[in-house]
Length: 369
Image 1 (cartoon, helix red, strand yellow):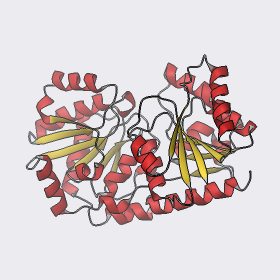
Image 2: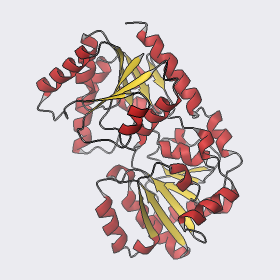
Image 3: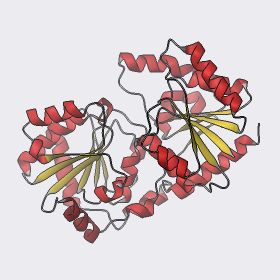
Image 4: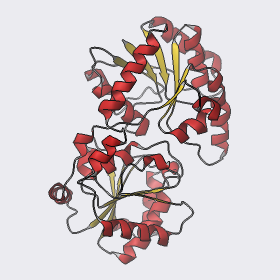
């Protein structure tokens, strides 16, 4: 069985990482994923996708003005591949177009929400207008959290039997940590003797790195040994670097970039800080808790992301001093190495269980075609 996964581009970001984790965990003699992407340039995961037996197909970028040609391209691709009985949509802005074409051809369609509603900006308003029709088109609906589902699809759908919340599962065993592993990771990175604050996310406005730098600048006054490690890349990297320079903290900020071994970097963190403006349910929050790292998130991140006793939520409206106090308190309470992995498993975020559910779900839907 082959399932069509429709997404922007397979780079290292939350939704894409969740997809790859499920793909890796599947019995690929039973189910294969094919990826319908909207970029011509290679994605970070493309080589691995092909190694695992998946295929990558390209669709044009939907601009809002090319609706006819976009639908024609979708229809042509689906006509060429009748083996895709299930079409699973992860990109929301044009979901009403590609899912409608899929339904016309008798495929079962899934709309998947990976984010909660962001600030009411012009671009968010456009997204809302484009994505709302999906509620009347898709057969099935999935959210990475209950709030992500409610914000995108509305309460009527979330309360229906066609909606499911699917945890962004990870391979929990890969993140197991200990005092010895933590110190070894710090030494490997050259961060021994430092208090390491970390964040793993794309360098975009949504992730609120500018505010994170202000919090860190205040914390650095309290602890001059502190180091802020930013794992990820994005369009705002230059602006964030400029902000660090302006705050005169550049020597204490590490722009780590992308890595295919997040677990090794996470193990070196003393505390994970994520002041995002809005989120679905970030994979990075699950990963850091599996590694037993104290975590501080904003109220822009759903409380469903708080899987362990080492997680704390702070309002976005709180001052830098309040955030620094939360960081200090988390460091005083110490790590959660002993209990973090099991608490993540108990919360249902081990990829073995979430991928098993998704596999059964795909098969059930395919039988309806």
